[in-house]
Image 1 (tube, rainbow, N blue to C red):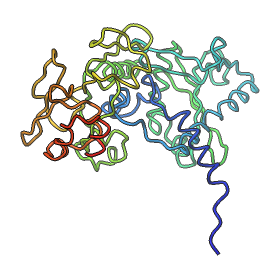
Image 2: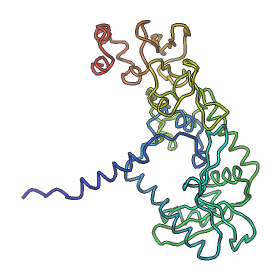
Image 3: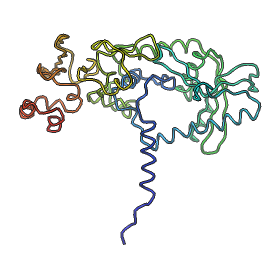
Image 4: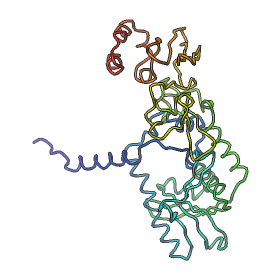
Length: 353
């Protein structure tokens, strides 16, 4: 007898897809929860949408959301012991939000509280976290700064941007429901270094150095930016990977386009226009060789001397969409070039390649 299909499979997959559609989109700004990551290059790729997000599937996104669902429990418990908690901005109904670097760097705090037994007269940033058993035990043993450096960095930025000097960090063990609490003090030197790091990532013209030159390095192997950083794949096409786009230092996360002389909406940034030209430092197939601003192309030379251009087709160049979709070998193929020279639409030429 043939095995019967699992009747729940379609429903489960639909739920996972729902989470991907809800939370799987690119982040508009660099977050305080990211700034503690060791590799600035990875942060640059993420902020510039050079890669296809963090690559989390629907199950993982649902798991992350479990932490958010736990926040309401924490808030009720804190209020139950007499702590005054402000968890949501009454004007927006969302978490309190603070920003820096022209609005491109953002911290969303879980709340602010007054009346903690440890510091009854001090307003504290509140940080809620969930953890598996091993992670919980490590944090309880070594403290947040050592066991959870990314959380520690997030807390420092939250204190910096809110003006508060303490964080009440609360973690729940998802296996046993045991709680861990720690009061974290402001660290002015760490705050200054983290804010400077955010500015380098946001306003830098190109990514910083690699964490390792070895793609098999344990910190690089499973990095979502590894394909562009180590495997020489082309970045995603969006305004943020275009050399014409600039994250401005004034306004609330404002981006501008030097090519067309206007600000870029979020929709603009996601779709990009036909005049898109990759930031040269993101093109790993070759090195910058020449460029023409009037004609709108940038020329690259591969390691063996092969030359190719990123720009309009009518001047012998390849659009960013083409370069992102085809392998370098296709540019060298006379047969495929003949197909392209038939003036086929990009979609047909790319499919042939």
